[in-house]
Image (cartoon, rainbow, N blue to C red; front, side):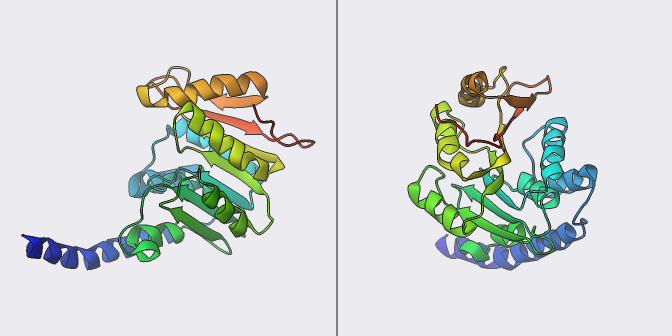
Length: 239
């Protein structure tokens, strides 16, 4: 049995790379500045998204309007939203994604990692911090090092869904966001699913003290996107 398992791994590896190469080629056929429908269709069908179309389109339009040069996403998941940000960001943007999941036994050379790094177009750079806890000081230091003194223009928080976890992500990374920059949170609906109750509680507290925008499409419990624009004259306040 151990031999059969090893044999399956040996056989599946080239098949995985072949599939990844095909997916990467299809990704690169999407224009650097596509319509939302073009970008969404690929991300939804080829990568995977856990957002409602109307909500993520609302956020995509806000992000595209500022053409961010630095994007940080906490909670990569399958990478569908990261693809959208690559098509909404500036041609020379640096995109950084943080996720606790591991990319595979080959690390940065795994098919998953290679395809997602390949989302970058034109002069963009894309850095994946896989197997990384956003709440770790070492992860924060890595992000600071990668940014090389540049401020974040768009921060997307969709990782730890506990109330304290969202506050911690905000408190740790919001000081890196430029005045006028956007901070977005997923799953803020006040009609939450069981696993989004922590984010709903966070948003209730946060929006009571900050000027915010939100897009929540009625229907299934959970979902919803909230946005905070960092004031031009000051940094985000900690609770």
